[in-house]
Image 1: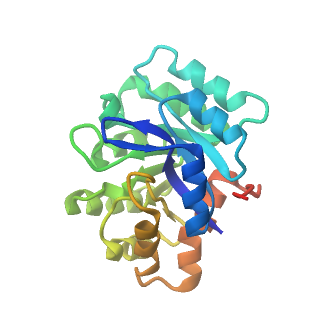
Image 2: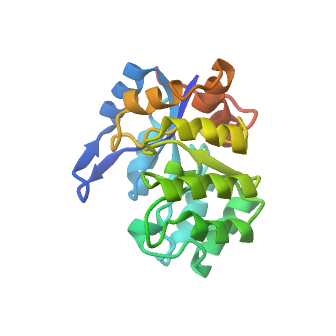
Amino acid sequence: MVLDSHMHVGDFPYFGVSIDRDGLVATMREHGVATGMVFHPDHQLVRDIIGRTPGLYGLVWVNPRMPDAVTTLVDLLDEPGSRFRGVKLHPLLDGYHPDDPMVHPVMEVLRERRLPVLIHCGHPIFSLPWSIEELIRRFPDVSVILGHMGHGNIVYINASIDVAARNPRVYLETSGMPMHSKIREAVERVGPDRVLFGSDAPFHHLSVELAKVRVSGLPDPVTDAVLGENGQRLFFGAMTPDVVG
């Protein structure tokens, strides 16, 4: 089963990118993606879509600069039947240092609920791997996913792998990182259970992102782990997620 750890839904006019619920489901079906995590700053948009779409689950896009950020997060995670499975942080777009004290209450919520956080990683000034590591060191018992594992800069890619190698609760997510060889290196250095497939759809094309994992030279069982099993274990534990029909 392929699980996409990093998908978007809705409009992102700053980037000229948009995809609605039906478009996302169609591209998942076309490329054999069974289930995945979606997010957008509009919590209610995501809540509505994941609530009526088998195979879609959510991460709460938290902007800790907002005064009601923690209250809103708790409400979304704790409501009956919630399909939110963790948090998305975007320090670059929302403009804060990853280890700013205003982020710490968000991490406390995740620590209490044993849920992961996906953090955009790979751009100065606020999403560099070394800065995110300061937060990781402060909350070593929270699972942190380095989204894009450094993105397009080899210095940041190598640093992301280094951060994951140093910190046992850190996962590397593959979307937007252009080097298939670095996926294999990440598995070799960090372990086959801490690399996660993500597409960043619709910012990146699912066919390209899937091919990048499949041509990286991993043994078939490890490829299967990266494409789905690792994400299922991290986001769902012993629970089996439902899938796109």
